[in-house]
Length: 159
Image (cartoon, rainbow, N blue to C red; front, top):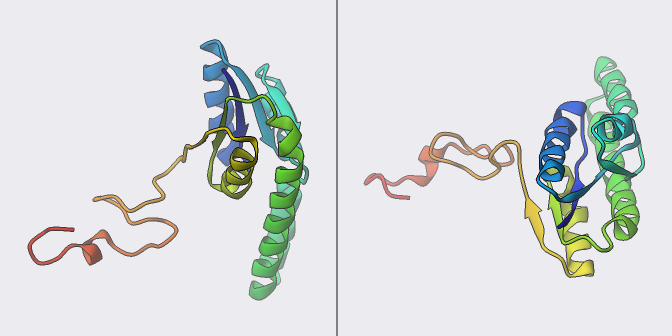
């Protein structure tokens, strides 16, 4: 099986998917990782195929860190939005060619929008694999909508 893994963010976000890709490769699958330029060596040092989705996560993080230090909170969010939009467009454009012939696209949160678009366009399945739960569980709220789980439980303990 040929698997394309879409991942982005910091090294802490990307590294687990590189490990997953290596495990899948060791199990006999062909794996290609699509990520930003700053992770090419991390990916290729494990023997996996790498395709750049463009951009440099470290440079964006440094720019945002500088804005935070200057107290420019609104500009932080504006820069994050611009970077995310640019990265999504690049990942989708570059991913179209890179995912051709794949049997499965595996994506995480930063690859969700481009992964879904690519899977639909190419007619192949998308499997979302998150490092943390993104839906509420009985123990934790969703990090995307951090409403306590108890909010959804009525007096009888039923959801």
